[in-house]
Amino acid sequence: MVKVNGTERDIAGKTILEFLAATEYDPKRIAVERNQDIVFKSQYGDTVLEDGDTLEIVSFVGGG
Amino acid sequence: MKNNDKLIIGGHEFQSRFILGSGKYSMKLIEAAIRDAGAEIITLAVRRANTKDQESILDHIPEGVTLLPNTSGARNAQEAVRIARLARELGCGNFIKVEIMRDTKYLLPDNQETIKATEILAKEGFVVMPYMYPDLNAARDMVNAGAATIMPLASPIGSNKGLATREFIQILIDEIDLPIIVDAGIGRPSQACEAMEMGAAAIMANTALATAGDLPLMAAAFRQAIEAGRKAYLSGLGRVLTRGASASDPLTGFLRD
Image 1 (cartoon, each protein chain N blue to C red):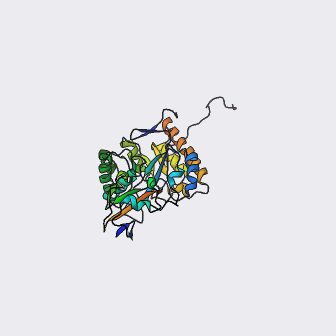
Image 2: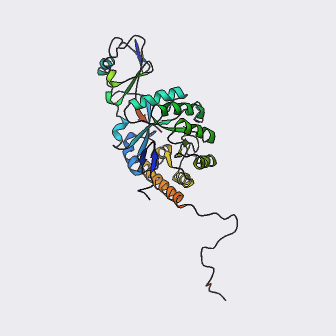
Image 3: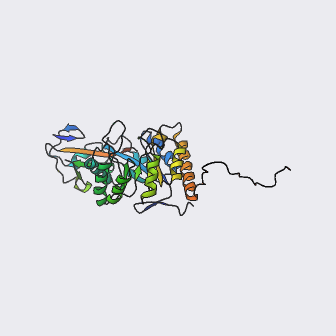
């Protein structure tokens, strides 16, 4: 299992690119962190998710 | 005055001295707020992403406006650095407002952790704008750590209580050779004007607008107040008498005797 923004998901073995393609995230408007390291957009296709990984997917929101 | 009186942050020039927050109001109002504020910098926060059926706030911010992400949510330097790096990876420049809070009741910034984060991020090439409690020693440490501006609070975030820290902000203005941007607690245009008269380089406001009756109208009011305060500062204020009075009218030619 891979924890994505706090929720466990059964996506181990997929690349980040494959995972994102199956979601509604807009790849232009997000940044991805895997186990607290940033994954650059150019690395999405080469980064295979492993069991126990933690992903954080963030975007900008209103704030002061 | 307008053409040569520029605010310079990290080598970037700005005409406007009003930094606008984007929190706590509809993103549909952002475009009008930016326009009526005349703002060239807007702050944003970084949070876990929603999926694409949600609108992006970026769709509402006109081109050419500089984005200033903050590190809100960070409780220490390490968390702030992490959020700053994610913000940069979001691809909208290298400005970052460092905001670190351990205190959840008064939301006061942790100056020590903020100095640490400022040093790390400045070395990584960020334009670092630390939000701080106005303390001269901490501000000097932030300068040495590579800060691009200093952002002292006027009163607790979101309180609209105005310049509670007035004397200490004045010390920063007088002693720190970086733009001093008063951030947090400014609730009315008159308070923004007063801070600008004191020599603040700019004002950051969010809640004052978000909780106002008519947000774009209040944005316009702040804009005028900030411009008025800046002009007064550049002019130099008139003196204050310790005692007595001084007539404004000629003391000759009275219709008597």
